[in-house]
Length: 253
Image (cartoon, rainbow, N blue to C red; front, side, top):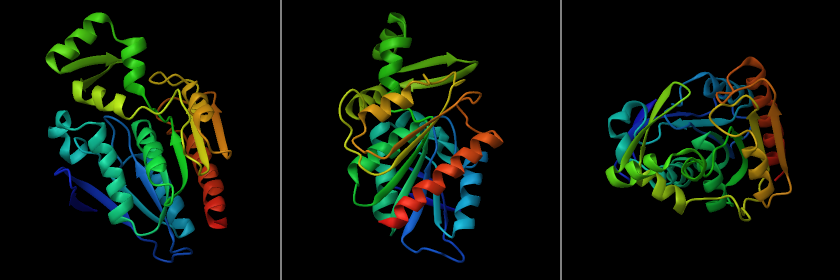
């Protein structure tokens, strides 16, 4: 683990594991965590273990304003987070990549796959949440909450016993980076895993993403008894099955 300062001037922790006995030297798995989450939990650990078994390089990193940089959370926005994942792909990782993103990280992974089609050989979205800011604004927020966000530049929002802080900049940059409701020019293989007991995200989101993707190689897994975290043993097994499939397709190219 090391401390890295991005071009955006945000400094966060990065964990870059290069395979001890690489079976392939042309592929790295990049893990991006979700909003108000981190890259050190059970899911990324399971993915790291899978990479070590396969001899694949693995990198995970804290999004700006999260983890060791949480004091600067309200200074970050979607453009800054998008620049982070692109910097990881362009300047830190020297190989082609498979992107794994949880929730917000899924949105960022799809953005990166659109922006870097020559390097991204597969995407695994775990309760991927592209356009969640638009969903909140259009279907969840009250008129009073919208006014408060616009007037004060921030909003404390409690959902499922957890309080988020949303900033005006996050919602403005979310609109700039919206992906759905139009063709999404991502042509690599994509797997989307979604729990049907997800209280933070409409389970139909995965199907909506699949409809927009231009790729013909798209798999959607709806897990009946799983929630937004996708951290149960059964969930982790499905994640590894999808990684096996994405790795096999990447190895063919």
